[in-house]
Length: 315
Image (cartoon, rainbow, N blue to C red; front, side, top):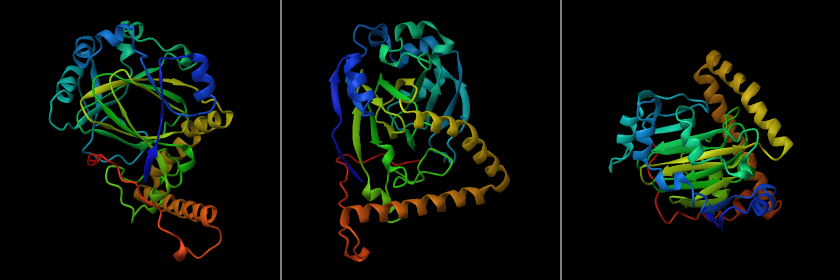
């Protein structure tokens, strides 16, 4: 797994430049200074959110429990103020909060951090919040609706592994779902050899950094400190991705749910085997492109570029 790609970093949002150079080209970029001059940049912290949203009962995810579908619900409920206390402890945490619409519970928060102009549109009012404690993580996936995402980090550092959609099969995409069956905290290259052929970005977001993730980009997120982010969304630029997102949310989702009910573990095992078969084919295709029609045992081993910083263990 090669994580040597360098991501562009720009200061502030020049909407024309962002649209032309990154949105139209579907190229990721880190934007600095988006919070400058905003009430959110001045006020927002976990303690501030606790004051605003402490009374709200939230569904939280337990990172010690395995997730085998793309559309999971929370593992338990608790008042937000209890959850906030949990993720601000210095020791390793268990819980995180995913796709939380805090604006729905307090409209004043939207005024403090309104949707940036470049992301205004049909989805512009949807600002989801993501909270997590130290060492919690979000498995490798891409967003099911194929939206573009502007992910702005507040309190705490977050590490993100980012891969382009071209690596769908080599990343062991689960059929009918949008997540990988491989463990990216501790990659097993014998079990998942396709990971040796992918190239991506290794990014760390600090307070005030915003990451533009184009449609279909794979991301694996790790909270290095207790913190939170807000993500605004914009519909896919490509009509193909718009249709793919619609298909993901409708017939693929319902087929997968139905087959899971009817077949249980047999359906899951079938999907895992199919993911491996597709990865094996993608490996063969990659080798043919790189080296031509030669015997497999004559091929050089792809170089694996290890991370300079170890990943936290997956739950």
